[in-house]
Length: 478
Image 1 (tube, one colour):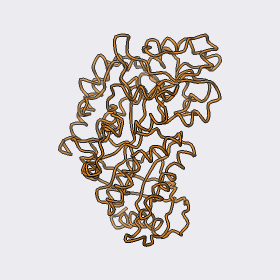
Image 2: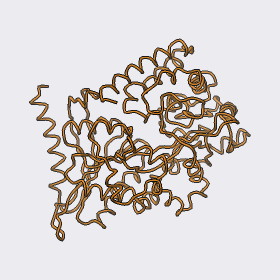
Image 3: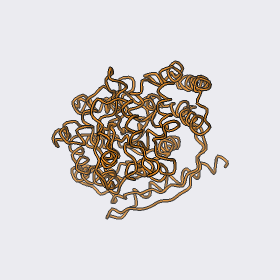
Image 4: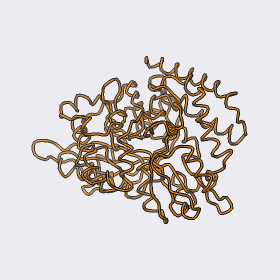
């Protein structure tokens, strides 16, 4: 495609979204928009690719702005995401929050657009390259994405509003949003990892329920005792039976190793260390040797929620899975804190948060901040809590609801009080370009090809990843 046609396609796509927000009828409605966009983009010499996507976008179109008092009505755009595990309540929560804000802020309207979670980061970067970025969105960007130059520094807004982050949000929610001591994001929610277990399977096998203080050796022992392949029952499913075991689960900390440095810039000396090799083998052997993980077909059928099949005894979950599990599980279940490495170590909590970002070239920054401040404060947190979809980043709302004493949410509450760290995959914006694929390659070689001698190929993979990291960090002057 030549440059003139490229510009034309991007402009037409932008005009389509603008027309939806500006030309709506007085009564809000939901529209589905399909389009194919071909974009060549280059962002700070780091992100460069050709993307072709067909998207289905659900947009709530706001009424035509009319004067209210001394100020004109302003419309701000908010982009969110949908995942396969999400229920209808998750979709509706976005619009419920927007309506609640509009009721108390009649001069500001919020246009909500929801996109598939997969590829959403690329969609944002593409919109930045085209100058058609939404005012506000939430995503999984690493905090150092601020170095790319398109995120608004929210520190002055926070200070002007008199917000004390340490009092308002959980620790992980603060850590996820800070780059070089400045806030370039604000937490949407706060979650932690725990182990959900099927009490019916445990009872049938005569295996005691897991208890606080157990170890990864105990986890493996129970998984072996609970697996009954002849009856299609498996001790473990989902994340622990995938490369996620190394990356986005409590096992990424509590199996005895770190895979990248705290700032995400180093992988040699971490990924290829003896501790990392042993940790990788632990997760890999649950599938390759012990055969306690749900088979690939079952994993693909149920995805992140293989636990609801009723055929899996234990699954690592976060609060993001609670709503669909509660809705779909037809058996007795409970949760327990994740296993620690051994009896001599304390468990390290895997905690996380989606983060709201504001575009630094938006035309309505003050109004966007008003919405963002409200959206991450106690009033919106109450709405989130009542929905059962997102567990808010505001500890005070957890306490007001008595969640610290709840048999399920209380376990998450305890994890959110523990020592925590930024997850390996969120320590650098270049993780997925340079490091993340290694774990899938290792999984394939070890599980599918039977190449179990990690020492023979992992150091070379680490060296290649380090070269990639060094090159990318240099390109952005870090």
